[in-house]
Length: 418
Image (cartoon, rainbow, N blue to C red; front, side, top):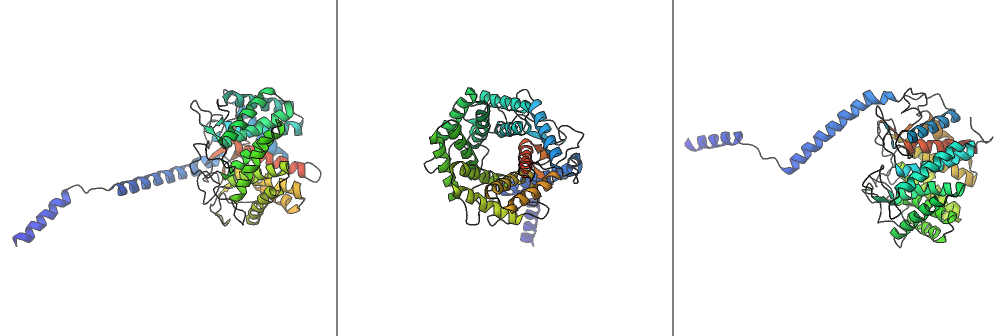
């Protein structure tokens, strides 16, 4: 009897000792706590913040939406201490710091709207954006990643997006400072380019996956720089990158390595950048194969678009929806792609697709909000608590909405949509 009693006593003592916790168990616990915290924050956002943005789904007239979006972009430029454009606004908060990357291509939109509206004040604003970009250009010629930062790091894509603004300004006002800035940026892009046309060095620190096929939109800017600066070497470099991009395309039209965060489920936004870049280079160099590649991708998205204009924010390699929310910025860009394809081919299904997705976007664009920080800005996702730009309006989503609706106006049978 003594031995069993001794074992019982030993077990009792052991039950009072601390139980060792493995590192794996600790990590799992931390992940569970983090997921719970994220879920609680998401529930709070949906309940308290999402109602702050309330569009009128019945207001589908193009002109008021363009006007409201442009007014929001003006406010986003005017709120800061510089002449860049604010990154955006989280629901219930104030405007954030200026964002060099997107200010670059917003500058281009302001130049285009200045021509369309015969509004010199918009051109003045674009010139101010261009000068600000020159002021903060890095010594090597690059543009910084992220919002304006006292400790900046260079970024290939961001550099190209600012070049799109400078090239538009050079073509319009011919400013020598913009020429110098654009040439320095273009030379830096060339110095970073690999022999196969890809960019491995110099990518943004925020491009964690290294899957940057969408850099072809930066190559489009390089192509334009070659034209306005009379430098054929820039055009040749752009073509090399576009050819590399085609090597990453699958037969069904999807691009490999084309997402900042999840290459296996690429974001519509970054795939749309890729389509835009290929069309831009293709139209300027006469390379029909680049346009055809973009067309193949655009056709796949067209087939998958819902009757109301909804396009999932992510898709897998087979173009199956991989998200239950819409990336509004990506949808607006895809609208632009379809509009450009209509302009190039005259095929009516592209114009119809453009109009359909634009109706979807306008139904989710709040142009009557009493809060001027939100009124006219476009959210990153719909529902607004979707994963992309959760519960905030973004300057680039708003810019691409202006581009999409402006293109619809220009392609309308009478020249101007209502």
